[in-house]
Length: 417
Image (cartoon, rainbow, N blue to C red; front, side):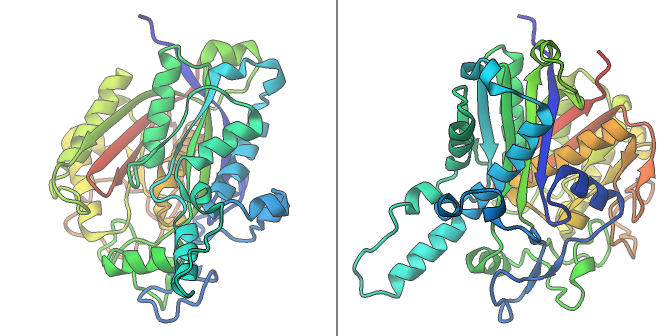
């Protein structure tokens, strides 16, 4: 069976450094940090009182006020970035076979804010179960693709992927496979997350996973820096519209890049810590390269997971050197989490957009907040510290790894007909 080719025809982003794709991309290239003191709630008693929040966002600017109240923020984010992507794609669903267009969406946690609010409200009462009838449908992870499909009348494959921080990369891989196997013409894919609230911040603080650099939030996310002390939470959404090549050409769509491969693996090591030798990271990159039919010499840029944790950054850099050998030293590598923070289940989609735009524009966004080299990270690696670098980017790879040992990686190539 000959596999179909899959291309990217629409992008949408709602991030801590920009509420549209152009704003997000401009923020990346200019090394903007999205980290600042938390405004969502009083975080003064928390170990970490800063995060990368989405800024200047009012759901009523995009959604009916009454309807918005029925949606958890992670669903609001999903609908907003998807609207941008649909407009960007130029898709006219009235003239397309919507039975063959689907939605596959990733989120690591889903409606935790809704769960927190409802259970807290119940606990404060007299024990009488007075729950909002929208409690469950606001909270469940699969409701985001449900709302997207309802809004646009899309009856193709529709579900959510859950793999912690690898969730939306898994969504992209599933969408890719459905299209190249001929089971769909196009799929709206991506991911969203909203965890900047008491339960989210308290839970990650209890794990000692977060940076506590409260005196300097803007520089707290320091991937690969010797003094990194944990990741910075982020929130938002990224939407990528994937489409079968001939379907896209038939409607005259613009094409950003071609998705040519995806890999998955498991660490099989620990519930939160990556394997210290990066065994799962090695395997997932090899699997993606094999799926794409490429060698290490073909990759120009890797958008790494790079969360700013002590073990994670070291293990990923070791894995890159192990897999790529001498080719590792001609690559550009960067962690855009240094600017956006860690969007958890949405990270893969938002970072894939960065990789796609690097391929489209031949420029690599930086890893900001680098001050001191870590002697345990190979100094020959070009980690694109602090300043964006122009170069030919024919092929870019994007890695995401999640709690539970879930690893996913996707590869994008310049579209050349």
